[in-house]
Image (cartoon, rainbow, N blue to C red; front, side, top):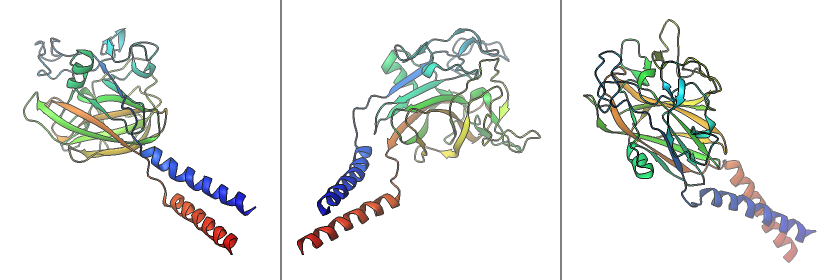
Length: 304
């Protein structure tokens, strides 16, 4: 009987410790990044009619369909999705929101980068990865976010782990640049297939009709999103971290914060995803220690 309990205790302790070690172990880095290839380059500005050159005329990028105002027409080509999903969109996305990029983390310790450089290196296409200095929330008298330059991305992980989001600006397209980002993370992804317009405000807690970032669906017409957290101070030295459950898709809304409105401070950016194990609750370690103590006690009793 003592032998049976000792074996059980050893097995439980080994399982607990092994789970922690395996959670932190790094396996093959096989992340997959995906990009919407729609670009505003050459597209006439909606206000001036002047063709856009590398984002300088402040048009909105990232439309999922050819007709950005109604989200209708043929799908814009995506890169990185071939052979992975039912059509060209990542994770079989059917939402009406304009989606810019997606990332799939495949193992514990996996990492990924979202940037024009990554898109060019992987697929030979330099995707337009930029956002506005006040897209997530500007610095006006009534701070407001602006849909126009807010980038939307999807993240999924095959294993449960913590995901750390870091953002840096790379080179401003319109003077002057910004350095602080706002990030909102939602569980799920947009499941609305109706008309959609990227023109308008959001993230405005002080407005007559508040549209705060704590609202489940901050962009009109979206569905299937549940807010799980946000940060208004993501910089090159300050990450935003959330726990990604295995197989769950998360939607990321990001843009500059504390700067001016959507059509100023437009800048290219790089988003870096790093991961770490989910912290083990202290109770688990105490339980493991208790089991080890029982094992030692049984051994001493048996020896006596």
